[in-house]
View 1: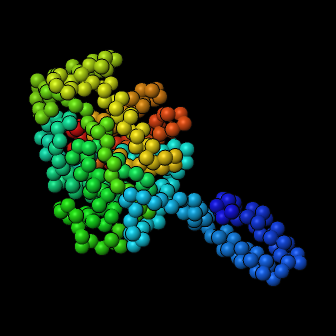
View 2: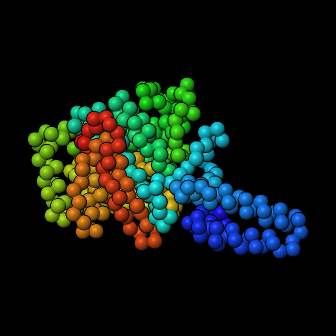
View 3: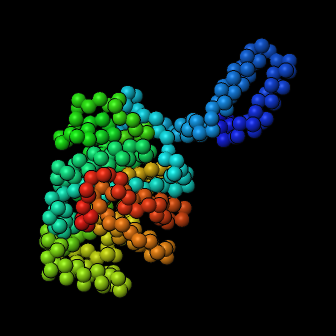
Amino acid sequence: TIRALLSYPQQQAYDAIIIPNVLFLLLHLSKRVQLLVAFYLLVILVLISFPEAHRHAIKAVVSTPIQIGAGLQSSSTMKEQLPDKDIIDTKSVTLYICRHGETDWNVEKRIQGQTDTVLNSNGKRQARLLAKALESKPCTAIVSSDLKRAHETASIVRNYWLGKEDIDDDRESCSTRDKNTKATSIAHVPKIITDSKLRELHAGDLQGAISTDPKISRIRTLLNGEWKQGKTNRKYPGSGGESLDDLVSRAYQGLKNAAKLGGKGGHVFVFSHGGLIKSIAKDIIDKTNKKTMLKPATNCCLSTIKYSMESDSFEIVKMFERVISEDAKDDTG
């Protein structure tokens, strides 16, 4: 009743609810029933007297189900969860896809592929800045590639939301941080689920090579040229090397798995890699026949995509958004 009422304009609420109930009070009812109805009317009057924006906020809170399970924090760390006003959608799942923070190989312009590199000190700081930039967004689930640089980025973001990380702290955690100093809309912080399908493209024998080396650059240019000609089954040379088809196929499966964790109307944070995110973006654009200029996929950039379970389709909201102020590398990997 309250959810429905908060959807009415104020005058309509008075006409539809208040007047009929006032008339009802005039009937010959027992004092107990009259007191109950009077109390009900008082609550209604208070609620509809709020400004329109506040009433929608109350409605969102009333409509949000209580979530119980892994990762649920104590009441002292619970925060009010209000949906992003631009991403309210109960029919699809919103995926916030984040690229990992900087690694030494990014700085050196080495091809990482599925080499299990870790974040450097700047990458960890970027991850904390990312956490701060994203803390106003709702979160139903957190999913990450199982490679260290992506999982570490996800862990730092989660720890920041839990109050265990500080922007200027270079340690893994900050136990002395005052948890009440950070305002976040995340009602609870879920545990991180890992999925190997979200790994970067395996670059075969080219992993570890300097991307600007003329010989390496020539091999990649030839391969990318074949992919553009539709020969997307051509693989990177060497053991384990993947094709564009291999990458896109498992990436879609990984994102669908993540979407299932969020459910309809959910908001899932996905931590992955530049090559995977770029490939998915290009494939969605090609399927929708939309001409879109893509920005570089810098470290800790944010891409927002919606997935409809009913139509089994993805829709781009925004790609490669630079949400941190730090100088971030755009080298893929």
